[in-house]
Each structure stands twice: as structure tokens, then as C-alpha cells.
Image 1: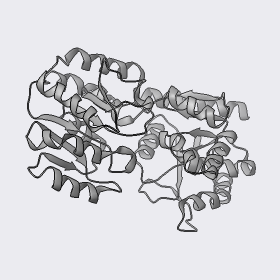
Image 2 (image 1 turned 90 degrees about the vertical axis):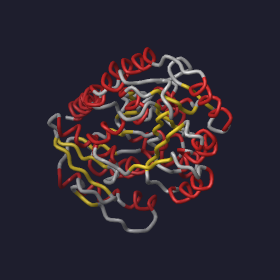
Image 3 (image 1 turned 180 degrees about the horizontal axis):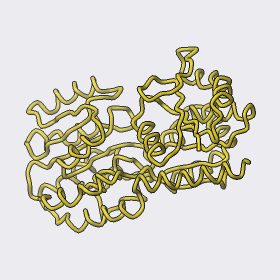
Image 4 (image 1 turned 180 degrees about the vertical axis):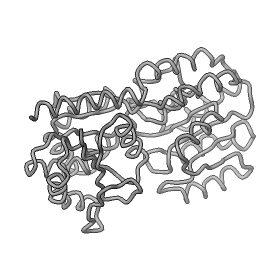
Length: 357
């Protein structure tokens, strides 16, 4: 089977998905407007406006389909490559499997009437859709009535699952400072500045040691906020690293924290649960399929006191996290293993191809 993958060539999700297909014997051609070491075909950027480039790339995509003769076209995600692939579909007639992303469906259509129409058009032209949660499937149906939809979370790699026993056995809920990881980049949707405003007192008192990525659109303003609010330190940064190093890095922490204001089924949360970190997450619909008050701490991402109270519980009245961590780990092990979910995706591809010929 040969698949034309249309996706962001810089994205870790793209490379992870591409490698997952290759590992199971699928021949993949990656075409992208963005540069990346694994991009096979660089699409032409004709303007400085991303949305316009997607619109203008549909003819080039149709030509690439004719040249490379894939069995199926697989764009990630609806508002960009999904839209471009939808516009090119009549020119080549290949099956179109569209992967949708949380922000793609939850945020982009709210920007304007045109954004909403563009996403709905992409959904309408797809032969099948893949989303990562029931919540996202429901939101897709609000944009366009579809039945041809599968729910497949991104999932976690086996090495993260294997790391669980090592790290969970050393977990000590009375340990100070609390070792907290926030693996979300400094973009508006991830709300990282909210975390600093809520937890500065605990951080400066040495009760929390917290680590963030060193990248994102708002990294400079975030660093400035940290200098003002947490002058004594205990705020750390890490650089992007290969997956195998990230697995080792993840095992150094005891708590996963995300204050995102919009999410579907975040891969970082699934990885943390699989590895045995205790989740502390925004109380938003997109994470409710994985966590609740029984196996996580939920807080209001608009209310700093809500997050403060969650950490006060952990600091002042430590709880036995062992059974919770094992339950979370088992949940991931049963339904969110990456290789198995890639296999499920390939089965959908095979079915679409067989119906096309």
C-alpha cells in the first residue's frame, strides 16, 4: 500500500505517524508546505499567508497524486491540508482519509464564517474521518453531518508503558518539592502563564519544582513573567529531544500539569498516564474521556484559586497515589497503544482502497 501523507513537515506528530506507518510496511510519501528532514516533496509556498497557500496548493497536490500514484491520500488536518486535499479530490479520485485535530475542529471554525466553511468543506469531501475522542467526533458532527468516522487516540509507545514499573515504585507523595512537568509549548491555547500566576507562591517557597518546554510563540513573555513572579528559581526549561530521551526524561517527574483551555485527547496526557505521572488538568470536555476527580485533579483554567487549591491538597494532605497511577496506566495499556492504533488506522485505509477498486 502506498499512502500520500499531507502534513506539517516540522511536526513531531507527523514524524511519529509516518514512522508508525513505515514500521508496519506502508510506503509513505510525505508532501508538505513546511520544511522537514523527512519531507519527500516540498509543496510550493506562493504567498506569505498560510491559509492562502493551502488554497493554492490543491492543483499541485492533484499533480503529485498523478505522479506518485498512491492508493490513498491522508491529510492532517481539516482546516489546512484537509481543505487542500478536498479541493484536489475531483482531479484524481483517490480515497481520502482525513485526520482531525482538536484545535482544527474546536478553535479554527470559531475564527470566522470562512474558517467554518473551509473546515466543513474538508469534512464533506472525506471518505472517512479519524478523530481521537468521542468529544471531538460530536464536535465534527456539529460542523457537518457525518457517519463515516472512527475514534482512534494517538496512543503511547511501548517503551513508555515499560517505564511505568520503574518509576511508579519510587513514587513518594510526601516528597518535596513536588516534581511537576508541563509539556505544552508556550502558545495561547495552553495557558502556561496562568500556571505561573497561580503557583508562584508554592514555586518560590520551594514546594514545587516545575519544568516547561523552551519553545512556543509566547516563550519570551513567559520567561519575563517567571523572572517577575518566581525570582528564587525552581522554574526550569527543556529543549526538544528525540522520543527515546523524552521517555527517560518523563520518568523523572511525578505530576503532569496542563492548563489548556481547549483539548481533545492530548497525546502528552496519555503519555504521562502511561508512564505513571499523576494528572492535574483543566476541567474541560476534551480530557473527560481519560480523567475525572477519581483519577486526577481537575481545575478551572479561568480561576487561579482553583489550581492553587489542587496543589494545596497535594502539599498539605498527601494521598496514596499508587492505586490511582496503576489504574491510569492500565487504562492507557488497554486502549491507547500507538502501534495497535496505527494498525487500526491501516485497516481503515485497506477498507477504503478495496471499496475504491
